[in-house]
Length: 343
Image 1 (cartoon, rainbow, N blue to C red):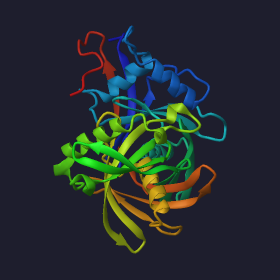
Image 2 (cartoon, rainbow, N blue to C red):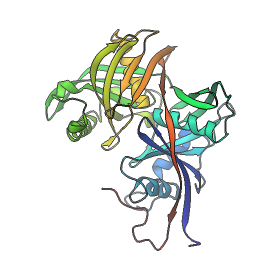
Image 3 (cartoon, rainbow, N blue to C red):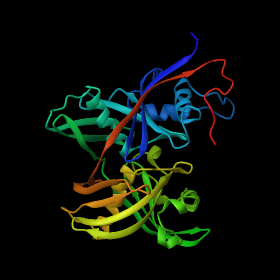
Image 4 (cartoon, rainbow, N blue to C red):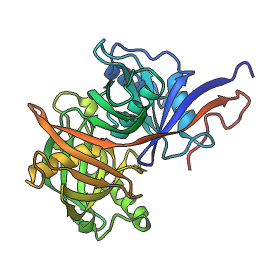
C-alpha cells in the first residue's frame, strides 16, 4: 500500500475526555501564526462547490470518524509556535471542525510534552509548557514527584463575563443564561431550571437542550468577541448543578455540550474557567478559594482565580492526563469507506 496515507498518534485522556495528538503524517499547515493556521484550516475543509477536504482536513476526518475514531473524539495538530517564547502551537479539532481553545487538551499536551522529552522536567518540582493556541498563549504546569507526573495545571487566557441573565426560550420553557468568554464562548445554564439533573440517565435530554440553547444564542451580541470575529459564537453550553460546598469553596457538577451535540466527558477545562469567572461575579468565589468541578462521569477538575487582567480574570484549572495508547492509522486508497463515517 505504497499510496496509503499513514498517520501516527499518541492518545491521552484528561479526566475521561480523549485527546489524540498527531506525531507523524501531518501535511504542511500554512500560516504565520496559530490563529492564521486555524483560519486557513476552517476555509479549506470543503465547500458546496468543491466538497473535497484539504489534505489537513482529511487527517482530521480520518481520526474523528469511525472505524478509526468516533463522534466524541478530540485531538490536536502540533504546529510551530508564534514565537520563541512558546514551546509549540496546536490546532484543536473535533468531529465538526477546529476549536479556538481546549483546556483538557492543554492538560494532555503538557503531559505529552514531558513524557516525550520535548520539554525537560525535574524528578521533583514543576515544568512549565507554554503553548500557542488560536485564542492566545496558555501554560500547562506539569507537577512532578519522584519522576512521576502527579497533575497538570492549565493557566488560561483571560476570562471575561459577557452577559448575565439572558432569557432564552427552550422546549422546556424560558431559562436564564450567563455568557463568558474563556478562549471560547460558553453559555451556563442551571440544569434544575430545565427540570433536569446532571446524570447519565438524562444525557439525551441534556444534549438536546444544549443544542437548542446554542442555536437560540447564535446571533446574540454578547457571544461576539470584541477583538477577533473568529472567536465569536457560542462554542459550548454548560448545564450545571450545585453540590454541597467543600471547605475550600464551591462544588458543582456539569456536562458541557459543545460543537454539534458533542459531550465533554471531563468537567471541561475552558468551561471551568468560564464557571470560575461567573462564580466570582456572583460573589461566590474569592481569591484563595477553589471550585471542585465534577463531570457527568464523576471525574474532577479543581479551579481557582489566579489574578486580574484588563481583559478579565486569570484562572487556573488542575487535572490529570494519562496516556492510553500509540497508534498508526492507515487510509488505503482502495478502501471505499474513505475517511470513514459518523453515526
